[in-house]
Image (tube, rainbow, N blue to C red; front, top):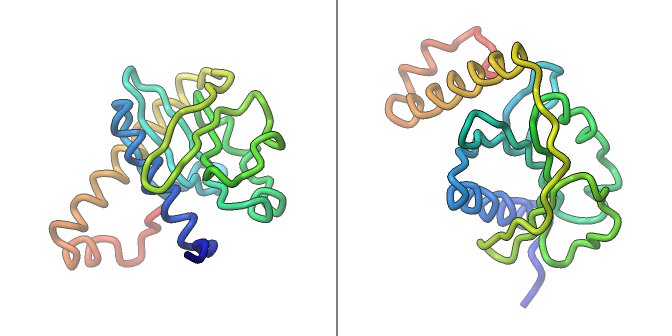
Length: 156
């Protein structure tokens, strides 16, 4: 059997991570634009109001070509990489958490160094998270209504 390509690997990792988040009691939200303009692959709201930012890496080339994950730390309490079982894990920074995915399953392998968000940033992020999640749910229920509402507005 052929190994999945880049887009398929990325999607499998995202699905596995979302399932892990739900098992952990976290609420995952995909593709969240942060206040610095960067877009987190997954931002998960944790029990107690913490935020985990999860950066999906589908291969060594993806990791080597992209260092923007360094700019996610100011917008989360915990930062994780999510990779599949073929990824060379020894190259990943030890202070960043690690989630390893196999098919549609994932395990939290390493906890990251925990960094507390400043209260004002946490509040802004919580409002952004809630607004974005509610908007996406509304779009599932009434796509045309949301499209009309947001014409001319910036989604993220």
